[in-house]
Image 1 (tube, rainbow, N blue to C red):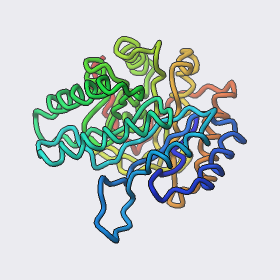
Image 2: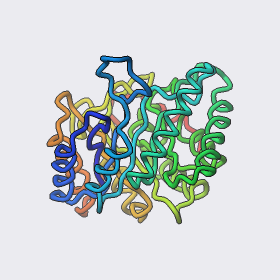
Image 3: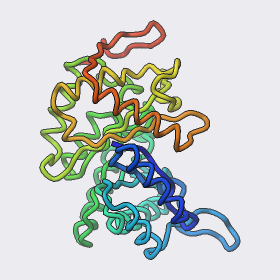
Image 4: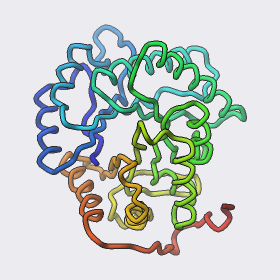
Length: 307
């Protein structure tokens, strides 16, 4: 259990990493996500755009992460749904760097967003490019696995059912962002809906080799899906995180998962991330069980969901 800890680029100082890692150990967290979100492949002379860290810098960071389960989140600029040749080329380059640095960091997986669904053949494009990247990963002997993330916006690729199918066919992991799943109308508010998801995970993911990363956060949603992340107990949050965590605990499924807390407010400080992750930890350590109660403000699409 843990949270996204810091952005790693050429500008990341070793002292900052040490301070954050110490806080992980002090609070009993063991899963740390590194962010490559804003990193670029190249920068014009004089630009302050964040380049990826060097191999040497990554090795120094890796030494400081010992004892923690590490993962990474690739930049948002990548897209597996695009038809643009240059963007496809850049996406492949980003994956190559992420996998190389991921191996140095000892990362279990790279989480990433697949892109928007602007065309009908979006799923075909994702499968083809993902299979190509997975083959390159195998050919180059990388150990870090790919984990496409369930998207929060309705027009983004993809919902849980589509992504678990693609992951199963490609032999990769899935990052089950349950808050995103909820925001786009996924059936995560009933025991039947959650059980169906757990069965699909067990049937499509190699749980003997990997834990499935899940993201938990407060979230604000509309008919279009995710609008913004927020804190777990914010008034605007409708995501039933206590109910879902209680259910996963009752099903003895927690040992098959890695929990990353992505809750945040406008300040989004390390202290706030620690406090939010502690809420999850404390709830799981308690014997509290919670039922899901629909709110009048939520446009409930679950009634139309066919199991």
